[in-house]
Length: 407
Image 1 (tube, helix red, strand yellow):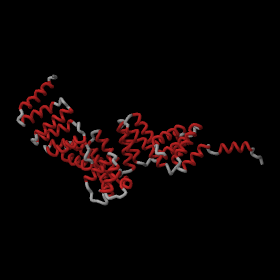
Image 2 (cartoon, one colour):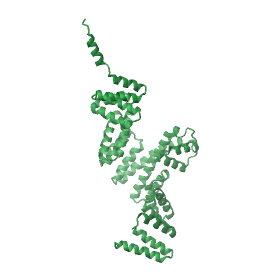
Image 3 (cartoon, helix red, strand yellow):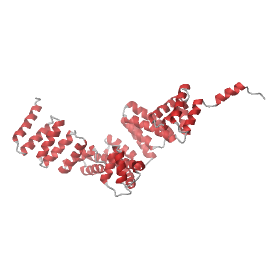
């Protein structure tokens, strides 16, 4: 029997064992010492840049340090070196696989939010990795649909949404997005089918989450609206007080954040579905149904400027001046420089014969933001005439004529 030389044994030892940096990195990762592990991985990327695992382990360290963006970048470096081995590595690391999926998905969300062609392409690349990790997650296809919609590829967008419905027939967001794609294509009858389905499904989630959030107290619509506002504004300290004092949960925001988040998401989804259903009926000149749906949207999200505006227009059309005034004043309280909303406030006040207030609105608000608003000059002339000030009325008519003549 031949003996292996000492030199050969040494060579075999170094070939068969992982690099020093890799062993050190793994040991630090097990101990949760992410910074130290990252240092070793960076050594690895310099010593052996062709080793995909150096970048994969670096990505894991970045996740441990809550650096999601850096983690995605490291994973893409690993994929460039060897895409197949990187994917197998991700799938083999079962305790972290879902976190890796979330990393690529979050990266796609951030990229898509920029709404540029380059960033949308990056987002789609991230989602392809998400598919390879877990192709059954409905969120992939909902986001894909949104991206293709931004890119103007309606066919691919519709296919992605329909895939989402196929995977999870009870997911309301899928139906909403399909409805919106038909709405954007002005296929209103088909859009309504999907919007109304989304309303039913969002309503179920809303009722379930509402019971959890308001389990200790009687449901209060105004309080629900305030929770929605504060969460949207990321005012967690104020939410914490409400949760403890008004909802009766001693553990406050820390203990109830997930329940609040689910409630707000369901509220937002239901409000959006009611809004688009309302606008669809609005486009079909079915004012009563449109107003009912827009009002339902405002019950959930009272600061929805579009719902306030369109419902106000319907109310003006049907000469419900006081109700319309309330809605347009709400718009101006949120967006003070909305000239059209201020103009409509003035119209409502004129119809209610409150000419002094109407004058104040037109002079202090409408003309402040739009000094050459001809309709405002006309209405001011009418208001001053009704107030008995014919001189002032004539001044505004003269100003209007001068603008028309370009003086």
